[in-house]
Amino acid sequence: MSMVYMQAVIGRAVVDSAFREQLKTNPAAVLDARQLTDEEKDALKNMNWDAVASVGTDLDQRVSRMVLHAAGCQ
Amino acid sequence: MLADLPFLGAGLVYQHALHAEIMAHRDGIDFLEVPTDQFLRHGPEWGEELEELKHAFKTVAHSLYLSLGDAKGPHVAYLDRVRPFLDDLGPAWYSDHFDMGNVPDSEFGQYFHGMQVPFTQEQAEIFRSNMAFVTNRLQRPLLAENIFYKFVFPMPSSLPEPVFIGEALKGSDCGLLLDLTNLDINAMNFGFDANEWLAAAPLEHTVEIHVAGGELRTEGSWKGKWADTHNHPVPDVVWRMVEHVVSQTPVRAITLEWDQNYPPMSVLMEQLSIARGILAQSTAAPRAPVAAPPGSGG
Image (cartoon, rainbow over all chains, first blue to last red; front, side):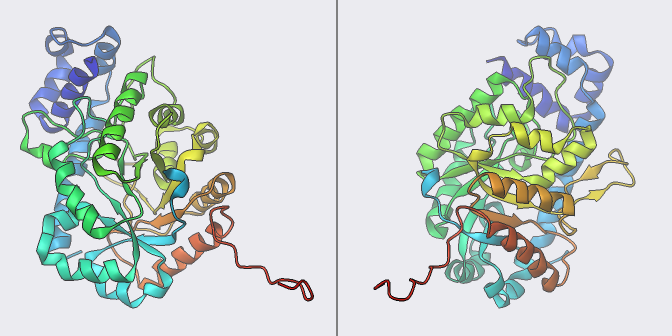
C-alpha cells in the first residue's frame, strides 16, 4: 500500500514548486514521516526533480493545445 | 475477448480541425482513433461531426485520464462519463495509458496525464487490478499504452519496462497499445536498445500500434533530448520496428498520431499507405480469396 504515499509525493511534486524545492534541499524533512519503504525514500531522495518539473510544463502545454484546437486554431 | 478483435488496418487519430479533409479522404483511412476527451469536453457542440465520423468510419476510442496506475484506483467518476460516449460511438476497443494521474487536493488533477510510474511488481499489480475493474465496468476490450517519459524511478527492485508491462498484462484479457515512437524516443533519451526492449516485451498482447514523429528539443529544460510531439513523419527506424512487431504477432491496427502543425493530407495518406503495406503481412489481415483451380468443381 505504500505506493499510494509514493504517488502522492510525486503527484504533488509535479504541480507544487515549493514542495519540489523542499524535496531537493531537505528531503528527509518531507519523507521521513511518511509511510514509505526505505527503497521508496531513497528513490525520492535521488529523483531528477528538474525532469519531474518539466512534466508539469508539458501538462500545461497539452491543456493549452486542447483549448486551441477547440477554438479551431493550430 | 482479445482474440476476437477485428482487423482494422491503417488509421488516423481524428482531428477536429481536419474534419472536412478527413471526410473527403475517407477512402484512404481505414479507421479513426477518436480522442474521447476532446468529445467529452465539447459535447453537443461537436455532435454533428461525431455523427458523420461514426457513420463513415470504423472507430477505436482513446482517452487520457483513466489513471490506470493509480494506487487508489481508476477515476470512477471519469469512467462513468466515458461509458455513455463509448456506448454511442461503438468503438472496436478502448484504450488509455500505463500512467497515473491523481494529484491529491489539486484541481489540476483533472488534466493530469502522462505521469511516469515506478516499474515495480506492486505497481504492475495495481495496473492489473485497475484494468480488470475498468473492463468489468465497461464490458469492452481495453488496451493500455506504453508512454513517453522524462524520468525513471531509481529503485533497485524495478523491473525492466517491457517485463513490467508483461507483469501488468499477465493473466488479463487486456491488450497492449504499443507506441513504437514512444519506445524509440525513450531509448534515445535514456540510452537503451529499443530492439532489446522489444525482445523482452509481451508482443503477443499487441493489438494496436501507435506511430508518430517527434522532435529534438533545442531549448528549455529538455534541451538536447527528444519529445513525442506528433508533428513529423514517422522515422524509418520506427517503421522498421513496426515491421518487426507485425512479423511477430497478429497486429490489428496501426494508428498515425499527428496532432499539430498539420501537413497536407497527401502526407498523411502516404504515411497510412506505408502502414497499410506493412500490415498486409500481419497474420490478422484478411486474405484475398484464392480462386479455385479449373476443373475443381469449386
